[in-house]
Length: 229
Image 1 (cartoon, rainbow, N blue to C red):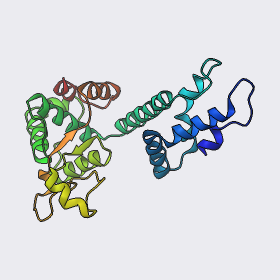
Image 2: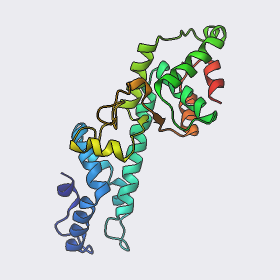
Image 3: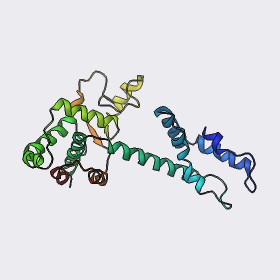
Image 4: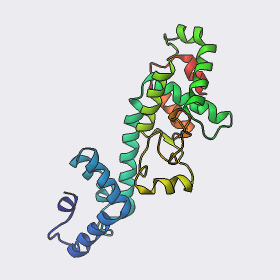
């Protein structure tokens, strides 16, 4: 679809052969091919596919009659940022609280953490501020199984990523077990009994992104906003 839409037959003042060759080169470039494959896997959205080429097409001129890979990559980055914003906008209030709990652990010096640590941080804060939270928009302390499900959702959305074990685990997974997975068991060495609650993970958001997310939500109690600061 992309090649059919981008390639040209004969356009005055445009080197047709060079233009079409450049299209082929760009489509074969690894980051472009990888993004196209992701679009295909997620739903085969032709509009999303063509949207990534808009910046490159808009930059065409008499002096620059060929598509530029850097412009296409800019389109991919913009598309990815838009998709991430939509994903973040969809998280539940509990999932948002777990995100803030992870940010709190980072501020305290923990570069990596597991669900147990995150839940304890969340539960401790909520217990301490329960009255203030209830006054600012009724909330409750969710039980651990419910919070674990929310944490797993964040992992599925790639807002949180498991920290894979070292080369030993990679070797154990070489038989096709965990490569490419983003779940709480990814990278667990064969034969170990580390439960998913204790698998180390990392938040894939910058502090500024968490701040922006909170600013866009109207359902977040004031005390949670202060916790994130």
